[in-house]
Each structure stands twice: as C-alpha cells, then as structure tokens.
Length: 300
Image (cartoon, rainbow, N blue to C red; front, side, top):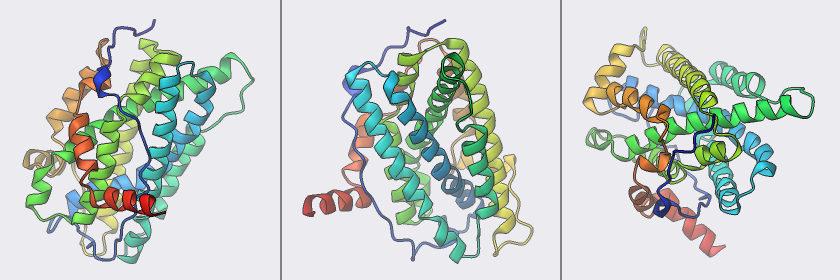
C-alpha cells in the first residue's frame, strides 16, 4: 500500500550544501542556560544522540543511493549526506568540553552507539528480498526520525525565550545552524522513502519504533546528565519539569510535540508543508558559524 497522496511544495526545494562550521567552547559554561540545569541538560542530550545517529543516517543512505532513479532526489540525498556528516562532527566536538567540566558522557554514548551500530546496523542477510527489506525499514525509520529533527529545528529557530534568559550564544548558534539545516532538508528523507517504497503500513510501524526509541533515549540521557552533574546534589529529570519548561518556552511544548504525531501519520503528509525554508535560509545567512565557514571556503 503506497502513500502517493503527499504533495511537496516544489518552490521550497533548494540545493543543499554542507557548511564546514566550527565552534569554540572554552567560554561556554556548564549550565549554558543560566540557572537552568534541566533545560541545559535536556538539550545537551542532542550531543549524545546525534553523532552516532547521523553517522548511521549517512551509512544507510550510501547503501540507498543505487536505488534512486530520480536525478533531483539523488542530488538532494547527496547534499543531505554532506550536511548530516557535518552535524555529527559538530556535536561530537562538544563532548570533550563536557568532560572538562566534569561530565563524562561515555557510559551513555556507549549505549547509543550500540543502538545504532548493532541494533540498527547492517545484518548478515542473504542478497535479495531480506536484505532489501532491512534497508527499506531503516530508510523509513530515518524518515520518521527526520520528522522530529525538523520539528526541533523549527522550534529552536523560534525559541526566543532562550535568548531572553541569556543562553550561551555559541551553543545557540550551534543549535540554530543545525536546526536551520534540518528545516532546509526536511523533505529529503521522506521523499527518499516514498521513492523507494512509500508503504503506509511501514511508515506507521517505523514511526512507532522511532518515537518510542527517541523518547526512551532522550529521557535516559536527561536523567544521566542530571545525575552526574558535579554541581547538583541528587539531580533528577522528570516529565513534569519537561512539561513546565515547555509551557515557559525553554523546551518544546508537550502539546506541540503530540500534535506532530497525527500530521506525520496523515496520508497526505509531506514535510515541506511544515516549517519555513525562508526562515531557515535567513538564519543560515546570518549565523556566525555559517558565515565563518563561507569565508574560510572563499579564502581557501
């Protein structure tokens, strides 16, 4: 059963390029949202999940390239691969800074690596139907995950409460540069899934797995950070605090997160109907890290 009802917004499609950004972390405090370790650490989970997750995206998509028969989509996927590889590297570079501040994420990142490399990694399967099935399952999983990375990207671009509370500008630039690129390429994963398969039952099944895994890993990561923060005594993370922070605007609102579910599961869903490419491109045109990367590329 194929989902052919989705209609992309064609005017939203733009060429994708990887921006070779870099960030200096020496002036970023442990609690980069001042006085708010819970928000800080809940968002910090991105630095634990994304390096392994986005390396996995790249690995799977390189296997998917031979299945792509559309030149425009192939170009988009290659651009997506370049951007995701850069995202992985940028978040990975935050981890030594966390260690210097007394937060060693290794016990948690080892679990994340196992999840992507072993549980969702390549399997010894015979060529043919079984191997193709496993590739299609992972392509569909990435489409579901990208729905949420785009959701988060759109959220952080509009999270003015973080600015009001004096959040560290370098961390905000990392998050918004990444978020803008997630919005910029938000249609690629879904377009690839529809191109190679598009089965609605697979979309629903893999969404359920992706959503459950993300929620489990995220709350586990937030609890890990709160429990191991050297400045906190008996630090804890709770859903109630997440809900309250969402109402205050320092984290995504629970209601908005829940409303995103039926949108993705709707048969007429297409990611281009969400977020704003214009807003994403405007941020990328002003991001200090993106501008520095463009200048370095121009001067090279």
